[in-house]
Length: 182
Image (cartoon, rainbow, N blue to C red; front, side, top):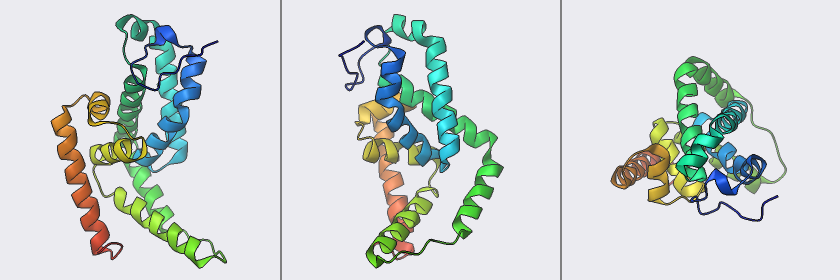
């Protein structure tokens, strides 16, 4: 149905089908929501809610010629933050349980070490505030520019830069204290 891709973030829904948007952005949105929420089931719910909202606002988004990538990531961000606010007790309980879960055994010591370090970094990522986690995930994992992140968060590029700097310092300090980095 469509040959055009919205990879630049500037394409409006006028040029895309809803199915095409879902296909193109679903995996990135799921990664982003998973990192914010530390809960894959909740991330799926948040992304599903985002696509439901897009369907309901399709004409309005098209008329305004809103860049679809920014709209989607901003909506996932806002929906995830709402989820955190509403479900903070459950999320903390889930985090405690996941931290106490026994790790699986593998024959490959290197793989186990990488898995443990990865889990440790993810645990330390969650000591950051939600906005700090969000900017790091958008910048490092989704490879968004400061301008794109600013659009998602509805903040200035300067604010995004400051938040990335602060989050990086906090994460590095936390990892250093845990002996992960020197």
